[in-house]
Image (cartoon, rainbow over all chains, first blue to last red):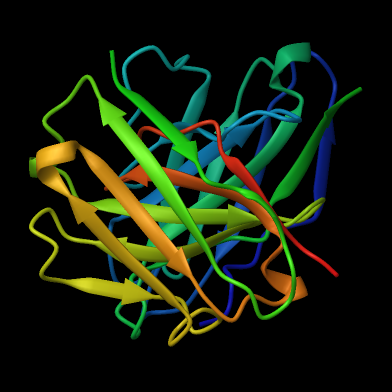
Length: 111
Length: 114
């Protein structure tokens, strides 16, 4: 099972919006609404930011939003803040012989 | 408060074995599916294994199939990962996570080296 494809890095200035893409296939991202996004700061465990494509867990800022079109899911962060600088990963349910697949991760730099 | 605490990591020689544990609290463990996810140093997240709430359904990543065994003891609120025939490429921080990855432990480091 190949990892989902994410850009290696994205950057933006405080206050701006950025979008991170996550591309899979019809066997994972495109076939199910079970895409999630995670934020990971250095040395910390991942934190769930978005689940089921576009839902935010309690306590996650509404500056974070998710969407999906075809085989590509997207995470948008609006009003960038310094503390948003982190690694971001997507995951999806997959109908392959495994069950879950992660993206390779995207490093967000807040300029 | 949901808590997941991994233990059992350490240094092991190639070909050796290790058993990881994940102690769960703050939720009804027996009702939750669980996962193991690992992260090699400086690398991304890799899903490793899944187990259903009863333990009757199990999945593995191709990279560990035949070498790792996931199990659980609902009476002890614990999740396990038995790792055999370890290789250098298994070196990683291993996390346990709830069914939809909404809660994660702090991770335990496994180093495979001679």
